[in-house]
Length: 194
Ligand code: GRF
Image 1 (cartoon, rainbow, N blue to C red):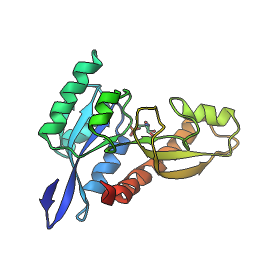
Image 2 (cartoon, rainbow, N blue to C red):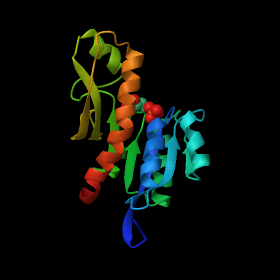
Image 3 (cartoon, rainbow, N blue to C red):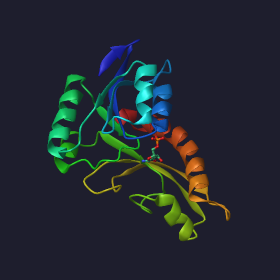
């Protein structure tokens, strides 16, 4: 926690593996004048993650962590998090599963965004599964991370209609736009519980 402009800001790390469009939307939200969050660190398991460009662009520290061995990788990450006094972790397209040990160390302080209306369609390939099952709606969910994949307490959800002619890509793009709105809203919602 740091004091800035008279109010507390929560030191936050964002974990990514790819494009980083959610990272970008979180950076924009957190850079607003009255924001109560400060993004101090970006962690990626993938040195080629496109989202890493935002570290440079917005002058945020980044660490690329070699994930050949998860135990070593997580210890490295924990060291970076402690050094930066991180109080909240936002997973944003992070494609590695965190160990129970890691999750326990940040219990209740790790959140994730998932492109489905959880508890439906946990895991990967959510859009094609929702379309094939002839769902009328899909959407996105921000939730706390616990030891079971995509199963932690739900913070917020946004429904998105599935059209008859939808392809997984079209649906993914429409949902992604909503993700960029939902994730900052979820941060706002949980602030007082952190
Ligand atoms: C998003 O759809 C998110 O819900 C999922 O992975 C995707 C990441 O996209 N977990 P981006 O890297 O934030 O653009």
